[in-house]
Image (tube, rainbow, N blue to C red; front, top):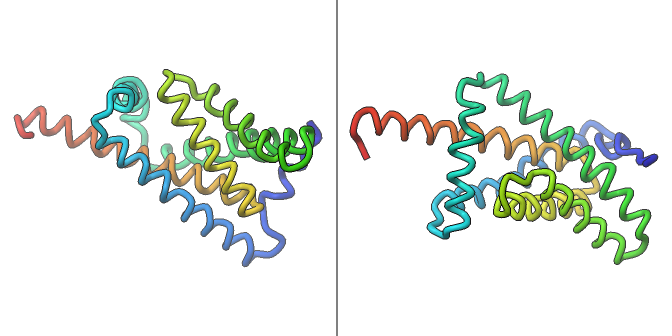
Length: 178
């Protein structure tokens, strides 16, 4: 698609690059807050989503090392953001043109992001909304590095937290605790 995604990965100076890493770390916080809220929700579709994650995704990561989780998070953050924001969103914006193209590209790239994460409808909707958020962070920051860091930081912290919750729950089952 002839998209120069690499050009927006690093800032022109080291200071700007470090600043974009900071923006990415800050941008992960709202996503993590939504995760915490979702885990405490009693709404049916959200409960089904949490159950799906607990039963089908978390066992895949149960034996992973800290380094393995970090590398997986970095790979997902880099690969997915390079594709969905750095290539597709930019290309769609250029192809569609104008302000309508900017918003259309954001929505289309996010829709594809959601569809590619389809485990069930709730998971796809959640991924679509995260895609919209990351796409907006990308355009506001002007940096692909910011969304790569936000995505990777979210994945890493979320995996650690969910695995810790699963371990505590398992320990409580064994000990007969709450």
